[in-house]
Image (cartoon, rainbow, N blue to C red; front, side, top):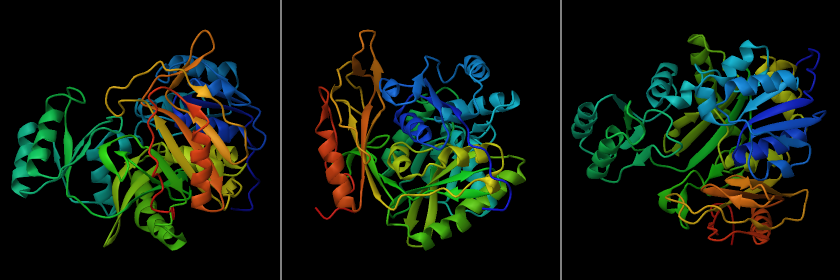
Length: 433
């Protein structure tokens, strides 16, 4: 990127979190140049199976124990996976103690932690996004809905674990979603954003940034609905693929100029040095890209899909972001392959799920097939059992999407647990059969 002396690569890395995203991050970072050891806290049932990775039973919200771990193990890079510890200021605490952290402080994490804050920032930055009406009371929200007289998107303001959005088909459905939020579904301190509905395909773009410069990853597309044909209730994501052909190189550059650069500039104008990933969830409308939401962490399952495509410079690039020195990072190489990810979920997901079912079978290790654990845990007797809604992510790469998905679904047949649910049509947009 520049003639400055290249940054050293970290050898000792901590990944905070316990989902499929963190499993994939730990796996990818361990493959990075010069990384000798990766710790995952708290990790999950599959963390201990990752070569060169050590799982530690420290909760992601136990900031003192995580700080003590960084000191005792001389951690050189911390990568915080989930949004909740970022919003709670974990990155700020670790940075104040002198550790390099990939992940924004609590100020920057408001991009995800407050829909109202994020929308106001977008308007200030001139970023294309749907018209909106903030509301801090039930009466205010219902009044705005009646004034529009049409179905609106209803979004709980704070972190809602991906479950706070209702794309209402009728005014009645929007009204019911408003009532639910102010009845305390997502906490007593209720507030929300009402948004105009926009139409078009959705795509996710991730920018790795040091607060001034950025590196864009290949665009990805995930599948939110539980049912085939994109039917049924929304989930956290049932599968994904990358690079999504919806955005070519010119389209990605347009997103950089229209969305990401102005957002970063607006953050800087507020005195926020944002070091981490900016996830832009976009809708490609007839008028161009429009931001549906920002997240302050890698998407899941997009992260599992993207990590196998990223080169051995990843740890160095993340350290450069964490320390505000992206100009000293090597270029991040990206494999020219198609990556396919299929999620195996528990029976009942996204509602009440059954758990405790043993994970059976095993994948033959392969350069182009990965099994990332998500909602699993390891019992005292060594058995690995299901412990969440999305249980496993099977990921595969190949020269074409048809071949990559054939490989992923073939691998999925080798693992099983009672009540396993998965979609057979992930990537239908890019598959020929």
